[in-house]
Amino acid sequence: MSAEPLATPDPLPLAEVGFVELRSNNLGVRIAETAAEVDAVQALRYRVFYDEMGARADAATAASRRDVDEYDAVADHLVVVDHDLGDGPEGIVGCYRLIRRPAAAKVGRFYSSAEYDVAKLIERPGEIMELGRSCVATDYRTRGTMQLLWRGIAAYVLLHRVDLLFGCASLPGTNLTALAPQLTYLWRNHLAPEDIRPRALTERYVPMDRLPPDAVNSMRALNDLPPLIKGYLRLGGFIGDGAVLDEQFNTTDVCIVVKTDLINAKYSKHYERRVGWIADIEVEE
Image 1 (tube, rainbow, N blue to C red):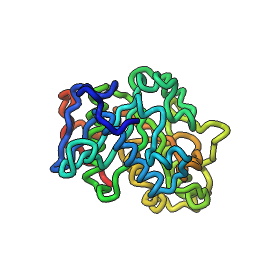
Image 2: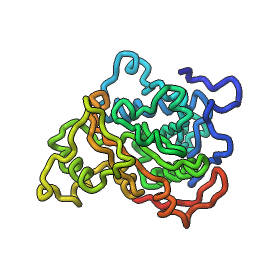
Image 3: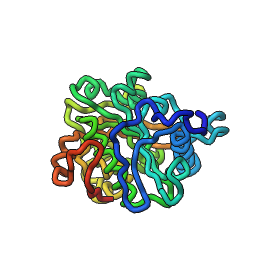
Image 4: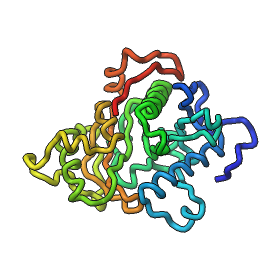
């Protein structure tokens, strides 16, 4: 994808009219509007996923230093912008990829379908949205930045009346012995109800119930989970059945499901029902 801005000021195909940038001091969160901003998102993802987290790049990816796939062209990209660095691509310090039904239809499937059977989610009435490719630049990994991202997601959910969120979330590494306490804790305490429970594809299925109950210190296992997964759980999120090893990205993935009515109930006092705007939401680390 070209690093040059689009020739016209029109947004990308799914960029949202009516989604107002939310600000917190020098930081803002909004939908990426130009090809240059999407390119900056892809460059940030490369730095975090490949340089920092040890993902394995093929020759084309290494040459471009961009994390790119077919979903980038159809998704909405929620970005955090540090306006002290600039108002455009040079200011992007965080991102989240948002895929609703219309975007997935352009590709023919959701991204998570490569790892999980998500038919139960797709068959549900109403709007669903897949979250993924979340990352934040090193110097911006603070509670404030994560709160701003979640404010953006919540505003987007309200704007599109999204009923259910889902997506793959990652634990670092593929050492199942080391990750056994966290996987067992998630399976025993946060398994999704049957009617909304994704299941890892048979050929990729890794059992999560790996240790006997008395061998898991629940508090320690919870504390050892990545902050993003803990954030989903605090929003009332559930876990699908089975983990998946992602050798390319050097992660062990779980499938997260969040019913937005649970978010609405938890944070209803903070919502303002104007299109494109949401008041402050407190999201713990």
